[in-house]
Image (cartoon, rainbow, N blue to C red; front, side, top):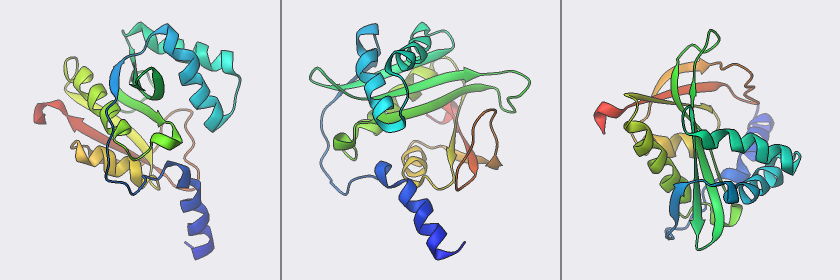
Length: 182
């Protein structure tokens, strides 16, 4: 890959890069409630754009708990991040099962252990209902790969494709965690 293109690819993930701080803060991670959704939607709209009310509706689907989970991280009363998990199945899904399906943390709280706390909470919730947990990631997202590696996720498929997901400037990688190992 030409050096110029490599810098463009790495710049794409710059907003998600871990801060080089060693300090951690205490946050409370719990199942999200309806009252948390507007603040969570603000995080999404600020990062990805979109319409606030439609984003809230999309998040609301995760509150059912049957085929999806939604956790919120708070410092005091402030929503500082959230994490999702969801069960995927169907003819287009090569590996059916439960997936960690995204973590988002406010920029000023990145690198302080929030993503770690959200990932741990989702893994513990899924451990009670499944023996395998999957997650897929862009091959260039080293921060996410390093985070999940700490929990024991191992590369299963590379390159990996998932329905309706486009991996820009990289390719997909599928990782798996066996809950038997926890």
